Amino acid sequence: MEITEKAPAKLNLFLDTPFNHPDGLPEWNMIMTSVDLADYVKIESIPGRTGIKVRTNTGFLPNDSRNLAYQAARVLQEKYQIRARVNIEIRKHIPVAAGLGGGSSDAAAVLRGLNQLWNLKLNNEELAKIGLTIDSDVPFCVYGHTAHVLGKGEKVIPLKKLPPMWVVIAKPKLSVSTPHIISKIEHQTLQHSNIKLMLDAIEHEDYDSICRYMGNVLEQVTGKEHPEVLKIKDKIKQFGADAAQMSGTGPTVFGICSKSTRAKHIVNSLKGFCHEVYLVRIL
Image 1 (spheres, rainbow, N blue to C red):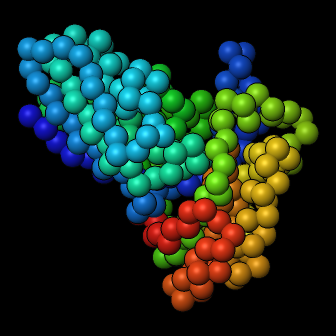
Image 2: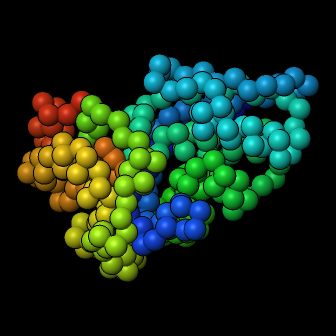
């Protein structure tokens, strides 16, 4: 038995963290959406055997228990005592360690796929709860729609469909460690933004206000360590994006445009400055 799941990249249209929980994990207040840059995850289940095997088309990903897709298979195997070998093949298109949630989306794809293959009959809420034990972005990736995400990542509140827009994604040639950036956060010094303004803009499908009220407080943290991230953001705006910001803990920056011609101009202009550039739509 096998199934192939699409695993889309995520973007943070808004990201704030008001405080840390006693266990050291941040409280998140985010608006996330998915785009049509995606990995494809083929999941095969062989009954009566044991083990998990992960293969990818890139040398940048671990194929063992450090891989989030591997962890997703193991957690379901153990929780429901399933005796079956799981083979996972990941065709990567999302850049690795980019702030685009590729690993989390792959893990969510494995949870969805095995839920079907093993007929576990789990709903999205139950899958999201399991996903949180793997990574804070997995619950959102289980749903995959534009959403307000709170808590440690487990509270996912679906939002209205976003107005039509083109998204330019630019990934510089560097990797950023999410745990390292999180360890550098000083909540009292962050310039917190008002998420209510952004939620209202989405509710009213107000593209101009979405551009105005986007924000990511971690730009201050990552930008201090990697100034090139902020340089790329400035370039995207200079080349004509209606708004631009870093996604997640970085280093990827994205810009949004209402017109495809302008988005294509930005892509062409960025190619001299940036290692990887993509033109995508919101899902």
